[in-house]
Amino acid sequence: MADLEDNVAIPEFSNLVQMDPYLKAYEKDYERRYELLQKHLSKLEEAEGGFDQFTRSYKTFGVQRQPDNSLFFREWAPAAEALFLCGDFNGWEKFSHPYTKKEFGKWELILPPKHDKSPAVDHNSKLKVVVHTKKGERLYRISPWAKYVNRDEKSIIYDWVHWDPPQPYTQIHPRPKKPTSLRIYEAHVGIASSEGKVATYTNFTNNVLPHIKDLGYNCIQMMAIMEHAYYASFGYQITSYFAASSRYGTPEELKQMIDVAHSMGIVVLLDVVHSHASKNTEDGLNGFDGSDSCFFHSPPRGDHPLWDSRLFNYSSWEVLRFLLSNLRWWMDEYGFDGFRFDGVTSMLYHHHGIGSGFSGDYSEYFGLQVDEDSLVYLMLANHILHTLYPDCITVAEDVSGMPALCRGVEEGGLGFDYRLAMAIPDKWIQGGNEFGHPEWLDFPREGNDQSYHYARRQFNLLDTDQLRYHQLYVFDRDMNRTEDKYGWLAAPPAFVSAKHEEDKVIVFERGHVLFIFNFHPSKSFQDYRVAVEVAGKYNIKLDSDEHLYGGHGRLDHNTEFLTEAHPFNGRPNSIKVYIPCRTAIVLANEGIDYCY
Image (tube, rainbow, N blue to C red; front, top):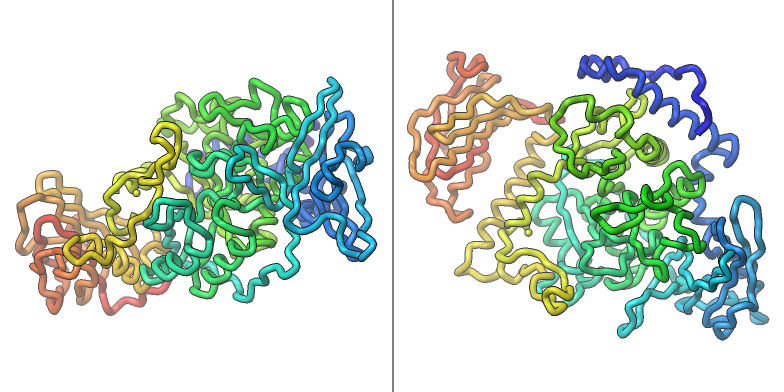
């Protein structure tokens, strides 16, 4: 990295410091990060004509069909001695179609059309890049930019399959407006069926999307879409970054699935894995050009000690091209509405979060332990995404609590919209979904005799009247619908007025909606005083004790709760309520405009 020039002022750093004055002590760190971002943007403008052109490199790398039906191939393989293309189109002749070496480690090849003017490589036919190394090795590789890969039933290695359908799916529904309140349904296409098999994009479109819509969710976070050779990795050992997983169906079927979600007003986020990559060589990025680096740092820095995977070199120009173009590819080609970035904690620190408890001391988030190459990559990705797609949603999966993670880059932050902290979502595994799924989640693997028994979602349980799964489903649905009406998720943080250990009662307000929880196993409370900010008349809007949800129906929903000018627990007003044991109640003031 070139020496830094005089510090560049962060335009809105004062906003960040106003929110958290303790960050003023780390102003130099924020200035350095922001200056590195500006240097990247300046270099992109100078060398590539700006980030818009640079991040559309998926149109110039891999294989591209030209207007005359010739095929243009381009790869980046800086350590290779020679590159050749072989496949079904040339009878797998290894040396008949050599690439031409270009500047900066790039290689190019043009295949003219056939005599009938059709492309030289047919749709759905197989290809391989043959890499000759400086050591004299001959390696068979999949293009890192491959748009589709598939595997024969008896094979463990994926093949590069040329995807250029004569009638590609055209999405017709516009992206929904970015939700004010985000209610996210995390989903995995392969397990979204009660049958013991890998489910499909089409199954998800026809059977799961209506279910999600009925429940009141407005966002789906799709797991395990980027191609991964090992199914049991949950989709976190990516082998082909530009390929949608073929085990669920075709790229066109995924496009249709997203289009139908959009028609329902549901936005779709991709679980994107830019934190690490599979160690696979024959069908992954690892060792593509025969070296131990290429897209990654050389070992040991380029190896993740716990995940047994490779770590990207975010300071490399071509790695930035690859990863940033990958984000645009999923937005432009498939119509995704944003991303959940996986493994952000691992990216942010040289120690990858291993052995660090993150006590909250700000010294843990600055200094030499921070990987600023990775951090600035995330700033760059967020800046570009939010500039090109103003409604794009980005979520960081981070357990460290990095300050300013979800503040704009103009304040010195990383630019994410939301942080997924993991601690609470991990509890969902014990219950795996919205109707209290009875079994844990596991994928077919050697340790369970390749069984699909736990790799499924038993939606059929909802139709069994004598069981209670449907009651929890209905509660989840009504909770979402109540939030949709009153919008507390978009409101400022909650004010907690009561945390009573002996009574097992928690009371808080968020967005002028009052939440009351009685966790006591046997004790109910009459005339229990709770604090409220706004005076007026409160009514019950959600009650977990309703018969509909499997409760005892102990609350009268016709009751109106009138506030008293009786200051209580830090609020100017209060009401008295009956709180049955083991019950959650949501009350709203009908005199308030609940718009956020």
